[in-house]
Length: 590
Image 1 (cartoon, one colour):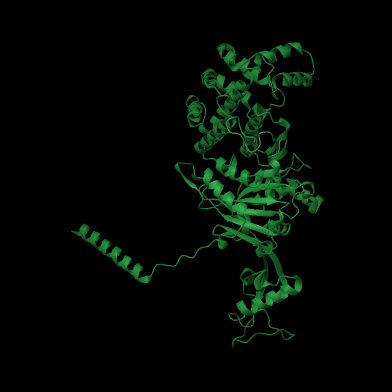
Image 2 (cartoon, rainbow, N blue to C red):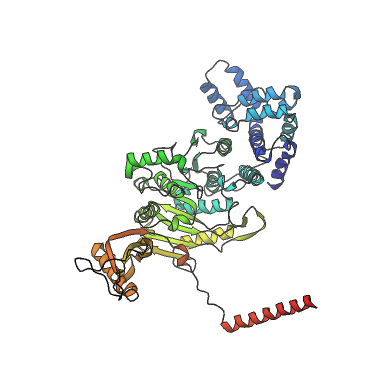
């Protein structure tokens, strides 16, 4: 792939000048897709031409059915051209290439998304069309030479390179394939017996499909390739996805069409505002929603859906702050996994750390966590190594969701610390300096399968994530230090203390009693007596202001205390360094 990527990227040298770096992708990406499709159609071109003549004047549906029956391909081109033939008529290349693009079947709408015909005219105007076209014709992108997986790698390489050259974020388009493979392996885990049966049919859906990497790797893992059979080559995996970015959608759709998937299963649009698969659910879901990105464009539609449908909407627990839509995608994904009454479904979604703990008690994020945990939807959360993604080195986590957990996993959440399970890359790609090797993934999957407590695995009951946010009031004191009482003889609260400084988070499990109001009152009373009153005499809990919150303090559960160095050792080092500095200063002064 690296040689192929470098070759295609080298075509940018031809564009330099009339095109700016951020515009290269507008030419190279659709040209790469066109060359791939042209290579796929080349073998059946003559047969298709005969069918086009035979069906002259017939309805398009009839022609499509005739071609698909003959070629077993879900798309076609009715023009007399191939890229090799176009190259033979340089003088008329511009108009003939437009005719070729216009000859594709209606389900192949990808070139419109790039505005490719306009680019053809622009290239011709700058006398670049033949030069660029000639270079693409020279590369063989037929499936026998370049596998689907290699094409996926090529698309990702090009997108990442283009975005780096224009200072844009490649993370908006795709997730590293090593991370995707782990996600796929995690959501398929536990379904091995069913997935191994001949004739098994499953569906997988990605609401943030990007270029289709997650869908492709899911198919590769289950079905496999001619060179590397998957879990069950006799199985069928139907792929579904929605993507908002036009170019990513175009790449995803063309890639899946070439694999023989139904083109209508890839939809263009804003998933949060307009679910193109409304009413549908799937066996598996995969997603990498954008991190820290606001959802203002979707706000009106999301809030309208919540107002109209309430708990029957895709967002039954409400919504997070407008500044970050990750948790909306989390709720959406839950709504798209097959109901437990129909056998259940599983999902993998990768997010940054904020959905674990952001928001105060009874805020949007806390309420979403409460709903997920109390509904027993969270199966496991895996902390990935840092420096895993191309555009960020921050901590990321895979949430594994399951609405039909096996008995031994019900009522619990498994936390897996995989931050040290990585292999260093010889050369960084953007911010990505670490990857998950097959051995790393196998070790993580073994921790998941064993489902036991250990150094890198914790099994926690759902109620261990809940807490009461209790407002602790302190008495207002007079000059002599005595509490000031109100008309009823009760101490007045000190209103000079900020509300946030009055909050104590009392875990549900503090003292071991979590049953109902009586359990809460008993727990709060025990906490106040042991943890507050010795330090704040006269303080009391304002029960009317108590709120329920949920958070997942992942790091706390894997914290390892590292004792400080002995003072004598630190003192000796300071003396040594001081002596070195004095010696260097003396050398300068001499």
